[in-house]
Length: 159
Image (cartoon, rainbow, N blue to C red):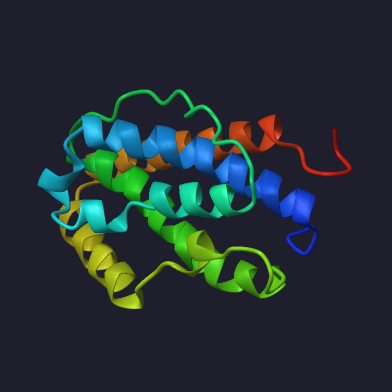
């Protein structure tokens, strides 16, 4: 994702479309895995609506959701959520590159207390090597979803 020039409207739009495709697919897979049973505030953490809003304000089409393998069990769910929530930390840095006239609800949505709460849940529930490994494997699969989505929306000068 670092190849996008977020100060460029076309690149920022491609970035949002790539993010939207990935987020929609991963969030749908997490819903299918009943993520809220493992993390009760899951629905408040979702970011698809912010992406829909930003893309709509830019007059850009909503992409197809990425195909995501089902998450099985709490460890995989938490590994996937770790990636999504971690992207909020990056968003706090990225938002500085986006011009004021572009919508930023996707990058600006976040609550530092929610990250700390998730970190506590991860520490508590991923304490065995097997559970940690399953979470890490799920996290890697989510990173791959984002990489594939970025390839689908190459940006302004990389078509």
